[in-house]
Image 1 (cartoon, one colour):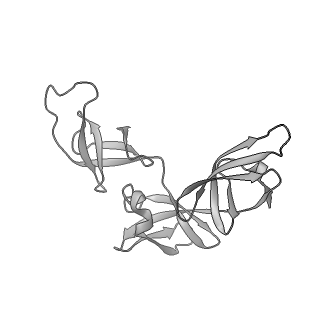
Image 2: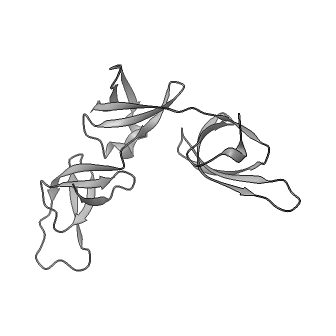
Length: 185
């Protein structure tokens, strides 16, 4: 058990049967009242974000999240299949829970799978990943007014906006948290 006053962003804990990660924590102390700790946290199973105010003496159970490097093998339609790089064990993760991540994974990419007591919670992608542009419209001469962009499709099928000078076949870096173009690779 840990005191809620010791909670910091990035820490994981169990509260009322759910698993949370701390996004923000702030201490509020008034003159006569006991200290309150306001915690903004994200449910690691459902993805919902909530804010709760704890009393200064409250305690929560610490949750130890296991992170393992795994290789993305393929999509079988319903689930995505990953292989542990050390044991060569394969696991399947429901494709519906990884809709966003699926846009930024190619076969044989290495990702970090997070789990808690054998229950797979999700996966973490590298922040910036290089992708090849497979389709984009050609730039029109004279279309260069202040940061003009055009649509392009990367090799996973995801559509991004890129500057006009990017052409088919080029490799660009895409941010996996917001899905935006970061630059040339």
